[in-house]
Amino acid sequence: MNDMVGYVLVILLSMGGLITYTYNGLEYKGYPSISSCTGECYEEYKKREGTIAEQLAKKKAAAAGDPFSSVRGLWAGCAACHGQQGQGMGMFPALAGRDSEYIIDRLTTYKNRGEVGRMSATMWSQASLLSDQDIETLGKFIEETMNE
Ligand code: HEC
Image (tube, rainbow, N blue to C red; front, side):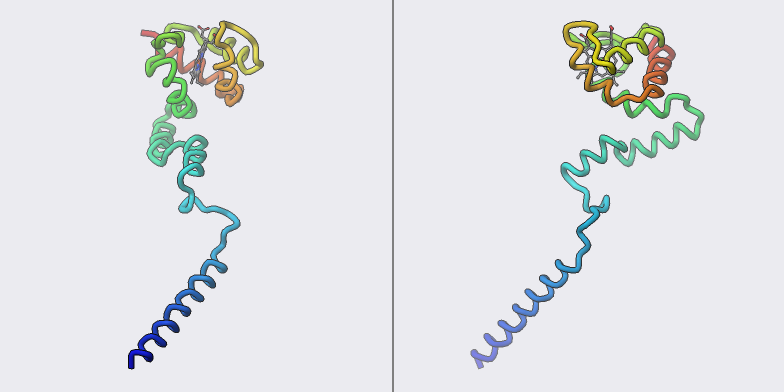
């Protein structure tokens, strides 16, 4: 009787193994869907698209006719150094109070790897991610929303 139980167990276990093996083989692994996108993959996605909450906020703002909806997500990155209101932080220069022409000129210079101050290299990587349209909108955004 004991032998029988052992025998059945072995069969069950090996069937389980076979099913797992087959299932793994059938699983489509070529294109990671967002549901299997975790860790580094999700960080990448978040960088590109923003979190789901940010995406919703963006859509909402766009729907409300916000002319700066396209750069609010971007600005969150800038704010890490320049401050939420562009007030500057320590070695990071203030942007508040600058007009759009100044901002656009600086960002274009950085995008072309031009030197402004001693820490220009910090801005090269930042500006390289910006399109000309982004730069123009950021200029207006800073001029119009950070002037107080
Ligand atoms: C990692 C920190 C960091 C981030 C993030 C960052 N900056 Fe900067 N930014 C700097 C530093 C440092 C300087 C000074 C560079 C220099 O010496 O030329 C600077 C300079 C600038 C200047 C020129 C200021 C002046 O007084 O001439 C502008 C404009 C600017 N940043 C805009 C932005 C925008 C817009 C973003 C977001 C897309 C951004 N920065 C993101 C660190 C940062």
